[in-house]
Image (cartoon, rainbow, N blue to C red; front, side, top):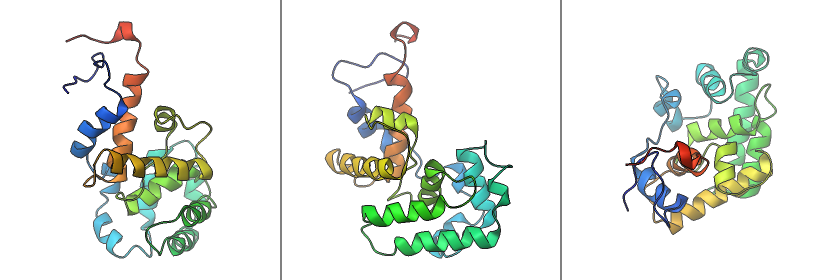
Length: 195
């Protein structure tokens, strides 16, 4: 089914169709994750480079950066990071383990669940996505982006990957496709350009 960005969706064309068509062509990694040695870091992620940690935190939420994020020491950052990874040592990842990992990361100054999810996604974009109010709205998950809504959000992404037969897509690609669908879903019909 053809679709031009910004045009009115064809009847019956919903976010599932959009995700099915868009996710495979989206990048698996965001530029912020392409820090000099980020791919090497994934191979041995026991310590997160502080520069990468700060880049991800600033990219996801610049508001608390100077006041809070920069006050985390390398020792604190890596202690929390290692504790989070310890929760995720067994795959497939279980909801309780993910909740514990997120809780560990949110103990860092200036790191809320959306930023913690970005950190996990930088580490493993195949199995994690970045929670955002726009994606929650499209998926009709009520409430704020918190630890409980993250596991529901991730389970929905996993379900979409299976239902839409997107086995070669990362959860990040699926989440990003949904994020791109948000303005389409919420656009004022009168402001949309027609083909």
